[in-house]
Length: 358
Ligand code: UD1
Image 1 (cartoon, rainbow, N blue to C red):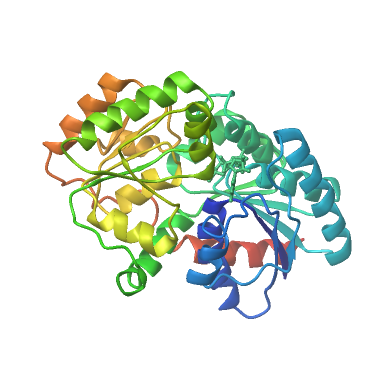
Image 2 (image 1 turned 180 degrees about the horizontal axis):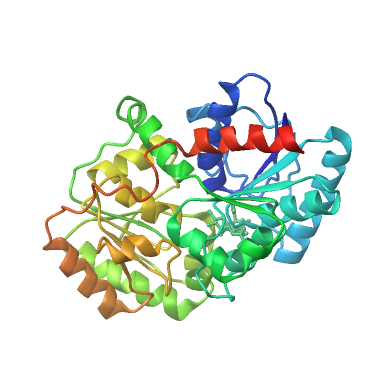
């Protein structure tokens, strides 16, 4: 089986680390890894390949720092050429980024079956580029690998039961990665951390591209920082916007961190505040409450179980959630919401079966 895998943005490296490891352990699978180039700074890309021992990409399209149309268009063109050249049996794409839709669209037009890992998630906010990317990718995928029951239900409501595709619940590959690398992070992390801080990340366009929202979030974080240190590994997008808007901050802002450092931050923090998709789940994996700095979340089961609060950019709501979670003992993290580390195995088993039929 020849699988072409598209990665490009940070969360996709984490997901690919889990699945590529499983592929490498099986007979008869050749993976052709393509990096679109979307994330290119060493601490947004290279560090993950090195630390997580992800195979070197065979190709890097070096497409980045462009508007959505130009970025997606150039990736589409580059991936199409690679499909013609490599003739893979299947195309594998992850998540909801511009790299995801470019890979899926290039493959489907050339009749290469598309397999989408992390299918079926919805925020129901069509203003988010991620929502558009994931809906379009799902619709043109032949196999939809869903992490959760909520994802399966979303697809069912949208009529996927009647479409010519397979919808399979496999669990979450990010859980596989967290379990595997958590055993190694202590020796490999370089951070010196005093437990009890708040871990924050912030990079979504809906927050960074709206000065009022960004200001409101930063002000709330500043007031939390007066009683509990807020550590903010800052995405380059947000760094640039803070400079553009002339916003200064006294938070403990550090450069983006690699996966081992992130795991140590998760183990030692008292709480997570984020607008990331993946970090909301990672908070749960490491037994921490999460305050989601967005108006919706795709990970609704975390909210239903009381471990995640969706507060948007409203300062009062952020502070209230912080106080509520600060005073609540951690007790609800034993649930099996995302599989127990077997998502990569489930996907690989299914892919082998799928390609033998096609
Ligand atoms: C992208 C994904 C988002 C995902 C996120 C993870 C899309 C539409 N968005 O958002 O779903 O959650 O990745 O981080 O695909 N930049 C650098 N160095 C880098 C990477 C980016 O300076 O290594 C700059 C870019 O030049 C650009 C900005 O950061 O100015 C945003 O990058 P972009 O890839 O467009 O979106 P992300 O915010 O990273």
